Length: 559
Ligand code: ATP
Ligand code: MG
Picture 1: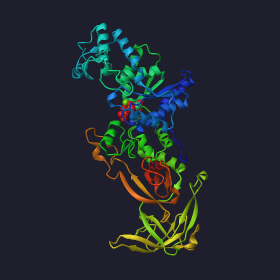
Picture 2: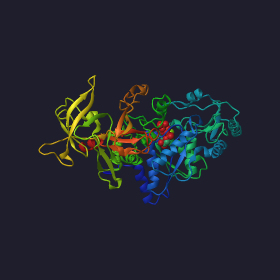
Picture 3: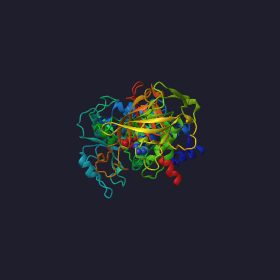
Picture 4: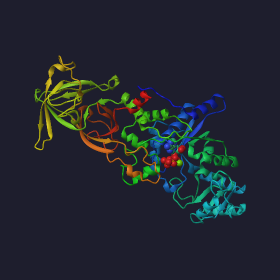
């Protein structure tokens, strides 16, 4: 990449490097543990890059494990999408795709083990009663009247829960730890709930499902995970994570390490809220190019390299760093596309130009570099004809002083070709501009005109050879930096009504036949990518990925 690669601090990487250098750490094993209840978003990308990145860096393994303990909210479609996203980002999980549900038999055996040790019991309190007995941050909890049940009774009830003899909510299995613990997570947390639900992996085998807390650390231990990396909200769960490891015959001793989650301005990073946008039809599915989902970003035109670069730039700390500026993400994107996207000319809002001193059947073709710095991208052929299109924005009938593009009586250079002068503006019955009649100065190909300076250069496309294209101009989905700042306020109120504007443009003929998911820089306009679904080689649909102006690079220079 052309721009500097800035790496921010990563305390977990530093810590592991120290462990490795001191010879205290063998092969490291990490895992990425998504719950398959939605698509992955840019926040998950931070966790993916961290976990897979550490494994890559230290020659270890990273597992992909679905944390699938809540069948009601989970779907196979999410599993498939998550696998595709991780692979697209360029990471490979070690071994098979894993599921917490693979360990349900072992977890159940361990639940029985706790019961036998007097460290778990079946509780009949209702959810409301349980809440009431739990106490508060300042008040100790009270023991449930069922807390002293005998081992045999507990084993029998647990087995009958498993067999489906009780209704949902009638009973739960709880750990028997300490109802007066200052950390509420240790006040006899729930290990199993009754759920008569069909599970996407285990089918109808189970009528009870383990809680997140009872599942996560033991799954880590079963898999030999060495560093179990999660976001800060799990810090208070760490004592419980360790309690299970201390009280069960687990085969390994993983360590939980917490880091601050990523929050981006103008962006929602909550699966629940993204799902609402999808379910309400406000966006075009989970991979709508306006969503911060990995598949949405992919459809928008983001590259895996740009997302990985961004995750490196933001670093990993324990300090809740507040909001990251989305300009940093688009900076990483631009610097990748600047180097790797071929150039093309495309007119988004066509205005017809007739070159009056060019013959009807005249045609000359320029051979132009596909990329200014990449010979490997070859050349493209650009025909000039009597009729062409320029962009409506590049012409003004009454231009202000510093307008260096086309205006009546003024000159401008057609990119890669001649200087032209606008001689006449032709209008329709309603006064709207129909076409410009211009003349070519044939003495200006590749050189400046004698004695006068032409400052402006505009892009253009031959009218008879141009390829019609649909262009979807995407913008931020939300108008405010933190759409979900106020918990109660409806974030839907902050939707940007102009987040998608569709125009019919004309592209240079070299783009004919472009495959879906191809990225370009439209010169002077921005970066664009053919849509994965809607675009076909004979019917091109482009998504605007990002504009050319890099505000982050500017901020950095000033700062
Ligand atoms: P959401 O709040 O969107 O539902 P989640 O944390 O419940 O996200 P999981 O599928 O459980 O979603 O997340 C998988 C992993 O990704 C977890 O280890 C989680 O900590 C991490 N993760 C989720 N969101 C972020 C974020 N914004 N920044 C960094 N890591 C994240
Ligand atoms: Mg989660």
